[in-house]
Image (tube, rainbow, N blue to C red; front, side, top):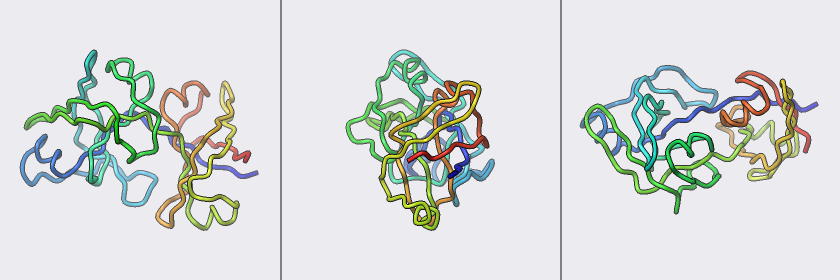
Length: 189
């Protein structure tokens, strides 16, 4: 059986250096709260508020390090609260997506695009992918055992020698299956 650890991804934001400075001040550097499962990725101490046409969320965690473009990742339920209808996309693919207002302690910025519902995906180290016969961008089927077991289809494989084996699903998906971070999923195909 091919087992993959599950990581539940709550709403979060990735910010560019320019937007970090607009929200927190010139030259501001994010502070690490905790490292995440992927090498070099971390949850920052800092949070921001995000406001859409209908609603707002405070204390949205920033994930670092800074990126080339800012991006807000939400669940479908979060999107309804904000009054947005973002597409399901692979992280980084933000062209043509809705925008959002981001509010920090030193100012606010209107991001014209960048709100997505992240496509469920599995990070594979190149060695794991080779051993299991997985190719980058391949769509997989995964069984998640929980209070209400589910089979997830169209799970995107992301392969890199920088990745650690980890499946990312959002809070809506985790709640539907009754699973939490650290539970295991089984790769079916």
